[in-house]
Image (cartoon, rainbow, N blue to C red; front, side, top):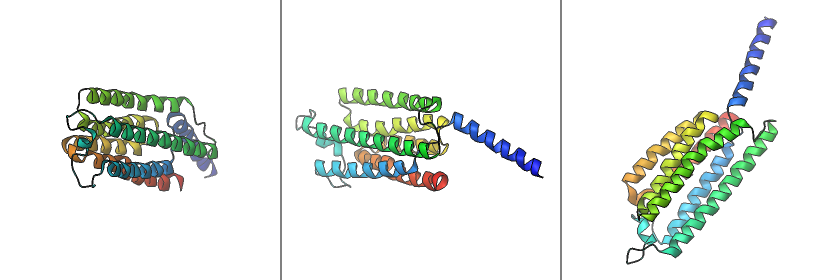
Length: 212
């Protein structure tokens, strides 16, 4: 009986080693919650700056002057806000992931982490370039839906090298991006739901499933 138990323990240890070598397991659920809260705050700030109610459609019209040209001051404000949110979100995710990795004695920057970053970077950089092209051609109403869509693709791609649960988050965001592209007048609210509410829900789910 003791020999069987030792064999089972050995198999579990081997599986754990294989999982650690092939998947990035330092992803923090709390970082998802914090990023989600910041995203919701960002949407509220954006609506307040644009002078719109949350149920008011066509937010993107506020980005244009009366002659149809881009309102540079409004666009600059939203771009700076988005950039600051991105920096804070990345810093938070990296800090909490490093803390989790240190607590579990897992290397934070190994081959698996590099593969994870690469698989996320390709869809994200492609999406960024696509959004620049949309802006160049004046399709500003499709920029927000595109960010949701390409972020979903990045999450789905990254799920091969981290927790499988992230795949569902990616698929939901892909669908949400497509819906936002159809109901484009309310795309900013869809963005708040995808980057805000979904991050909070999945962050709590990951925290209570893997970290609690």
